[in-house]
Amino acid sequence: MPQTHTIAELNALKADIVRWGMELGFQQLGVSDVDLAGAEARLLAWLADGRHGDMHYMQRHGSKRSRPAELVPGTLRVLSARMDYLPAEQIEPAELLDHASRAYISRYALGRDYHKVLRDRLAKLAKKIVQQIGAFGYRAFVDSAPVLEKALAQKAGIGWMGKHTNLIHDKAGSWFFLGELYTDLPLPVDTPGDSHCGSCRACIDVCPTQAIVAPYQLDARRCISYLTIEMRESIPLEFRKAIGNRIYGCDDCQLFCPWNKFAKPTAEGDFAPRHGLDDVELVELFLWSESTWLQKTEGSAIRRIGYAMWLRNIAVALGNAKRTPQVIAALQSRCDSSLPEVAEHTRWALEQHTQNAVSG
Image 1 (cartoon, rainbow, N blue to C red):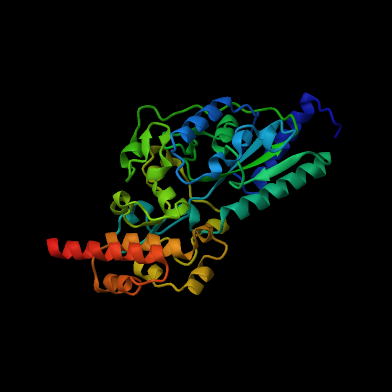
Image 2: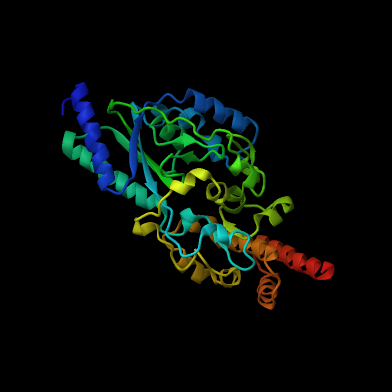
């Protein structure tokens, strides 16, 4: 294909790209330009308020996050791709929230690490484009670089930013991953998604830690996903009871979003729950040895937090669980752990049961 492309050629190429993407397992693809001035202003205000907490990487790259051509010189368009991940389960996820003995793990982390799945599909998509037009400039991203993926996806017509700051599609809900191809191809852009949240505030009201401090404003320092995945230090005491049994991430704002009545279980085998993690006892997980944990989390996004944080999070959940001899014994087995964060959170959990026994 020549260096200059006619409108007809670009329209035909885009149609091919969308078709190839669907064949590769994406549910939707869209194209946006690279003007993110509005999103950049919101990001800078969020950072200035310190709402990113310890996620220093959010400001480390400066304007490269909001100016795609600074991250990848020559970028003219961003191709955003959506892949649904909601697994089919025997038990409704909402029924597991704050369960007396079972763990809740964010549904996106139950199967294979999405980074690997989407990156592989994007690479195959790029290869198809090369086969069609020859070499072109591109770079693929899946939540692994300074990219404002949700702002780009909204501009590409994938959906709109909900009040919980997740992207929502009016026919598919919000249970999906995003991936991007930055490219120098001047493809025709799509119409940005319009908001359909209206006066609904279900996500705001249901958030266990009141992390959604106003519509479209999330304070990550209060978010359970941040507390259980991003924050390496001790979990603040003020949030431990509210965490309940959520040991890796939190889905409450999605579980109670009315638009997710349209979400359909994924047919993607890689996202099917592994090792029964969609319905498992907290005590069982807490007693995993490090070698067992490494084996059970191989190829999983859960690996990113490490074994110590895994135990730290479960200790908090056990402190919120129903008191049983098994729970107490499990906690006692780790209250003198050589891992400081594990020992501290385990002792807190035991204190909760002691206080409850006295008050009861």
